[in-house]
Amino acid sequence: MRWVPSVATLRRYSRSAEATPKRLDVRPYLHALLPLSLASLLTGLIQSLGTRWGLFRHYWLIAKLAMNLIAVGVLLLYMQTLAYLASAARGATSADDLHRLRGLSPVVHGGAAVVLLLTALVLSVVKPRGLTGYGQGKIAAVSGGGVGGERYSVLR
Image 1 (cartoon, rainbow, N blue to C red):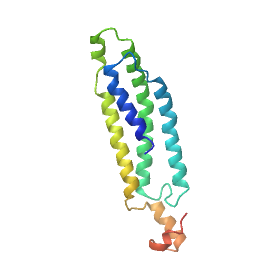
Image 2: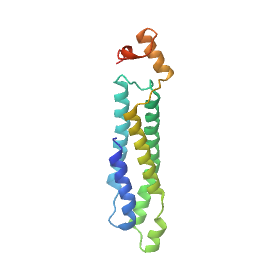
Image 3: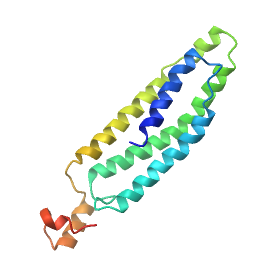
Image 4: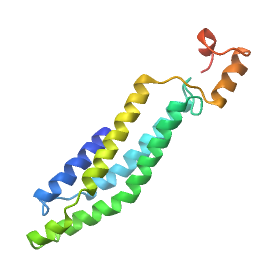
């Protein structure tokens, strides 16, 4: 959920670049987005290591970690493109220059990020069953061989 406001703002900037290119300045936003995304990754790691869910015990946590790592990687790669598009839009002198800058890339990337975030949200709420091999081994070691019920709450 920590990413949702950032992605919403990114989508707004990508759509408003076509309408008002001279007033658009995304540099402060881009400089804030990277530290916030890394903070999201770090707090997620700390929370998973500090709770009974663990980091590698459940498949849904591994999926969320992978989605977060992919999102941070794409963000790092795409920040240069957004900065270029913003500076080119500010320097445009005619409507033809602006028309050449129009593309679906910012909108598609923003839409994909929203889908990724909603998937992570659903995983966090639903918490599908499924222990990894590591998680089954940890539970078996703590509970003396059985998995389930009250014994699982021993893990913290």
